[in-house]
Length: 566
Image (tube, rainbow, N blue to C red; front, side, top):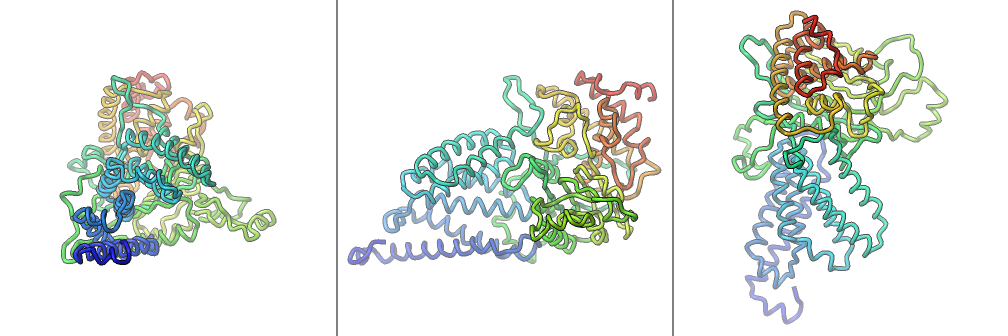
């Protein structure tokens, strides 16, 4: 607002408009900044605060729309400031997705981020000699890219990466800043993330087909009449990532990204749901949550991991399951031990940054020193008082084979191979093969068969056949007379049912593959052990795998003698 006599000429109504806008803007910033102080764990404390923040931003957004001309003339409202408000609302929706795991909120975040780009809200920023404004624009691009990756909007991602690259080049050329290397690293990371899939599915015009790996209505094999399974439901999941040199973007490794999608349904439109997150009346019964709640933990310290684990355990509803997914470097025992307890087989390293307070010196001086941030099987024992489903993807996954079920609750560990055949092209940087089988089993099958691309028609034909295989695996499991009851207790949940059938498909495929049969450590394992002859080495399932290989004309990479036994 101008000062002196000119201010007196402003009509009182317009002056009030500017005052009200300034109040809403300050209040929104205050609430938004307060979000950082909310605990990242626990599902109740933050909801009312998020609701108030959404409420103020909704009012602010509508207010600037209704009074745009007055704010332009009297306040000097710039387009980048409108863009900032829209960007904050997009961030709110994204963080609400992280807190609730409801993919619908990703669509809302996308619509606000998209509007900023379509309406060119940040277009004038480059004309102002203020590097901090340009950084706001670059951060907006990075956040938009994350949302698009999670929504599998790869075409938009590629456009955004090109635009971001141009913006970074302009920024570093104009301001000669020190953060040029960091922004170029962002570009490299997202480029590697886009290219992580080892197999391309192509349309007839050679454009790439974007495949979604979230749970669809036809995704999990249906429970058929006569299948006796438990009624447990997957309610909470900890997805932990710490793999050296693995492709990552925004504290999300490719393994974490694949697993989180395996634990989500396809997004719905939010229009049919409540207007504002967190504003639901306490008297209303909340609708059944479509997705299990997730914590995404990138390189957590032991204390961080235990805090989140305890919060999940505390809030786990009755008849519910806690899933723990570990994608991390193996930690092996430093020496021979007389005992064989839950801390004597090593574990997985969740954080690579050791406490350096004489840490290395202790390590070298004392061979009995154990890595502080190693998660041992014994560390999880207290939490097995409730149903637990564990997936370990690591070079020392077998440490979890020595689990003991102390409390009699349903407990299953799915364990990756500890090594892969040398003849198989090393793809570890682009994600683990085991996790790929759990996320996209057909793509993993194509990769181990030596295929790098496929036509859409054949892909869809193979997907149909794979659904048939999953149905048959479900029957094998539920009709088995010697299977541990824990597997059946978890089989009533769609997500866990799909993970179990994919695990068995993965294990059966590797046991039949010629180059995997060289060493048993190339095979996945489980705790409790599955009855091999009824599941992973069942002749009926082996015949199906050979049929799938025949459709793809790759039967030569699998052992044939299984058909003679059938």
